Length: 194
Image (cartoon, rainbow, N blue to C red; front, side, top):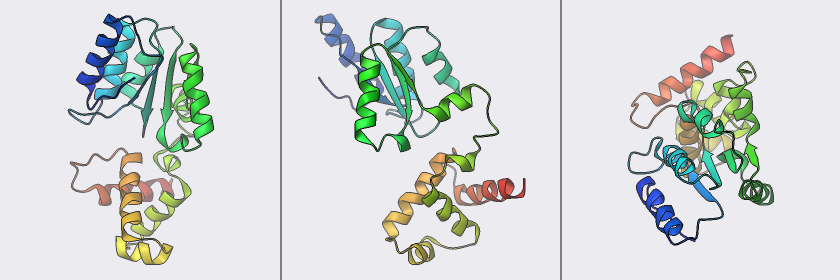
């Protein structure tokens, strides 16, 4: 029914549709949206759930947004989903999840469930990485540059840059941190020692 470029526009778009008596079947949003690129999307989802009791919402994320995910799920109503992006690549499964939420069900990524139930031993920063991202981080820890990693893994420089960026996101290292590569390697080394 429509798209939104940022969180305020998302809220406004749903309001206009609701005022016309045409509430969306489901709202699909990312945790990180403009204007700040931080948690605007999930805050918009919570606002929409508070304003429109029967509005199904699916939130996509690269990570578990501790500050808000519990609030999103705790309202006791169905029609809510929280999925990690690296698990939505299988389109039929993703579409089933969206349909479940649209029908009033609840769909929560298994890693989110483990995180929320306190099974943190099973979920460490490194367990968030796919095998490829873990391999890229291993080479980073060995001192390899992106060009070296591209050569070692037979990838393009652009692919390696994307993998490195995803490693940073999975390890919750924000773009404004100028030492992300060092912090990523330190995380790797700390977990390898323990």
